[in-house]
Image (cartoon, rainbow, N blue to C red; front, top):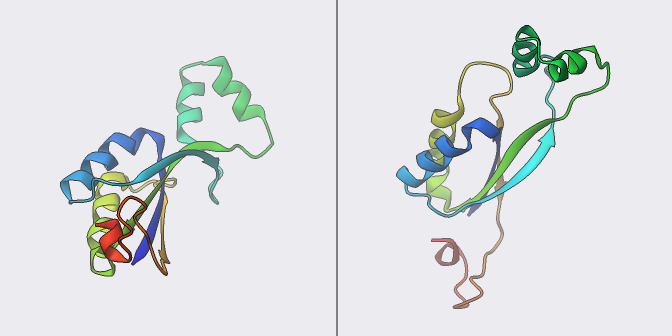
Length: 125
């Protein structure tokens, strides 16, 4: 079993949910998170500044590191489903621009369904 952690843009959450459901992964956990990658350009702030939004202009003048709101999605899947899940997340989130997100794959040693006591992949399927 694997745990897939995907960090995605907030505005891609609905498309990602739909892509996962269509790919056969209806169960997942999502958290609101903030963070930043290596990039230093936030295109949303630049667009806001071009539209003369005072908040965006102020953020462009701030020299401190900006933490951007994102979503962190966690899914537990069987080993043979990892590629299918990654493809669904990438299809829903890839724009070709910086900030499209990251996907991490981690091993899961065991899982237990509390209600039934099922273990292993039976607990996550």
